[in-house]
Length: 504
Ligand code: GLU
Image 1 (tube, rainbow, N blue to C red):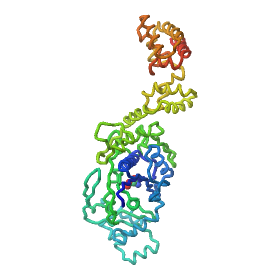
Image 2: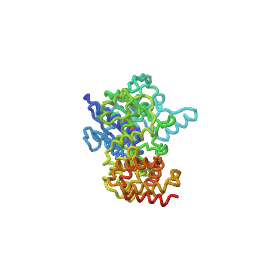
Image 3: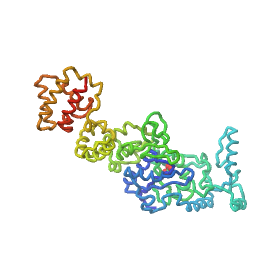
Image 4: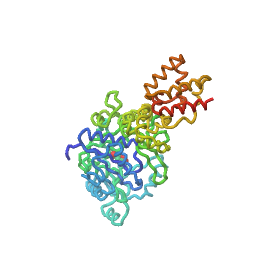
């Protein structure tokens, strides 16, 4: 094995990729790039019962959207391929057999019914049945049966599994790069199935064999896998292989309370827990994703990076390049990290402002078109420049700028209190004033209108508020003179007339 850093993201294609999984992928990506290493994706699909069509494509598409695609995966630089475990099926049996030969594993012929019986019996005695050192020599295993009996069972086609023969009474000294030293008593472990009767390895066997064969240097994964670490270390020992270094990332917690943010939270809490939209192939149920909600990939990377990590300063905004430069596993926390959907929006506001006006205009034009509004790119770009400061998503644009495209259909009733008896006369005068302006540029309109107000000795508010109401229909929007310049003289005049004629 070389000293090259090789890390992997190893999802099981059992549904859409949860945002916690995306963070695991991101931390692996960052660690690989930081150390000039390789980030690869291996699909762990040995559990045929949980396979969900479309999930694998979804996972790879999500990583691509985020800009953290693997260096190696299915169909890409398959240096240690195949990268899909179901296609490596043939390979695992040999390793399971190897453990049998070396005494680290044994055959177990118990049927599902027999095991069920044992479970029920234990339960009725107020106990839990655990398959381990206490009973493996009494159960129907190759540890109890003679060599001939075992050979016969196999020759007769009896279904069997291969179980790990966990050593008894050993203390394991484990090290996790985030959690430090952990001591573990092997007697507490059950004898996990490594190889199933359907001819497929279990997660544990396939994971260890593949991490070894694919020369994985570090295993960076979610905290939920920490309990598997003792078994995994033992498996490396059993094979006589050097184990990779382990790092277990803290849980991502719900915004309120202490529970783990789960897949089932879906849209229930009012925000997506998936990177992309997902339609369940069986139920047809739709779960929303960050992409379709209008979040930028930069936003998602940024907020995920801060779930359980910081660079030791107060800095919150990080580009992907900066994250690669600053990321360090030693700064990943042990404690769970609370998900903060409001903060995530704040990040999006930031990244939206960084987009060019002209790109935003292209996106906004699509929304306008859906509303039947055709407006040229130059005009839309100017509108975007005036309103984007106030938006979190492009989908907020229309609400913030409808008056640039259509005259008010109605007037905000709350604002009507500023429409006094003398307002119609004032508005008619302003209308005449505006229609006489030659140089129709915001600054010029402003100085003409304002000096007129001053000359007439009328309060600013008496004119400006009803004028905004006439042009916009509400007390909202950017600088009024910018709006007048943008909609143009004729339209401004028309809107003022309309207000004077309609508002009572
Ligand atoms: N296939 C496992 C999962 O679905 C991978 C766990 C690991 O990284 O070892 O998360």
